[in-house]
Length: 381
Image (cartoon, rainbow, N blue to C red; front, side, top):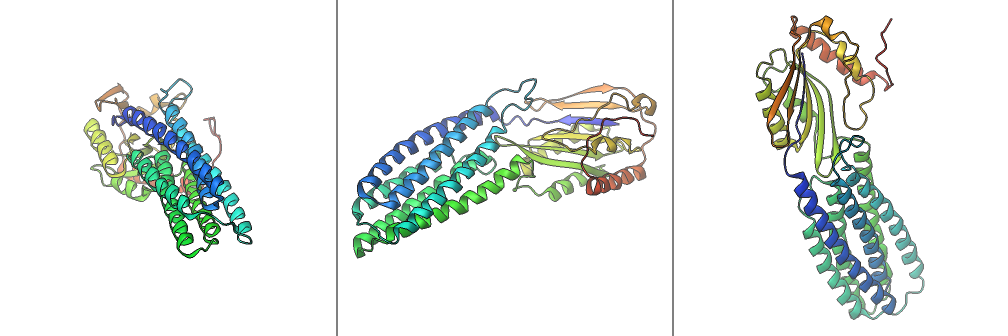
């Protein structure tokens, strides 16, 4: 028996996207205004600390604009071609943001090193005032995008950048205070160089994480082993294989898994309970679970092709299901969390637990050693 059960969570993603779009819009406009003010004072005072912070903020404005655009795209409804909508735009936005910040940090570091040889005289008081205003602006902006940043990479990137901006502005305040009290003008390029290092470290971390997400890696806050342990611990489960977990963007985590469960008479209750537990413990709110009764391993060969993106297409066209006498029960949960099923009656006569264990071992061995290759379901000789 095969049962494909899909859960779409029903956690108000559309409302979250609406609030996220507004937050990004407000934060982007506030930061754009402050960046213009800081750049103007930086040119007036000839302060590299202010100019570097303004350049950093300009990079964040561009990044926030990308995040805003990604949040707008993520609201688009699914189509026949884009069946998940445009949620993954929220994964590509941080990647572009990180690349921009790497470039900006290099430019800041170069200019700071160049100025160490002949640092200009800089009025300290305007540096202190403008940088202090930057602390207030960035902390307020971070507060606006704080909701859901633990699970949404797009928001997380914006939140971390804004908190880093606040820290950078604090460093500029300290530099201004130091120049005011001691007259050490070299503090200005020194702080600018420090800002460049801070930006580079944060950018490389975001670049690594956003690249992994774009490559469908398991989200960093989820332990795949713990997810498999949860599946194995469910009543009646004999084996688990082909477990894949990835981010869809916009705070949605998807998962596919094959579960061998010989006695599946309480199918709907089992699936609903497991879906809720996956969401509660791991934030996996878009699981697709295939329940098998075991007794045959021929279905594993359909998974030998790479599982690209989001799905695990299993063709049922020419695999002689009628000859095997199988029963197909497709269970779905709608966004309100209500389940319904569609039965295609083909009753299975063989439910062998030993065979299920063999399938599990066989599938794991294939996942470990097989090279991804395209297959066309052609009959084997």
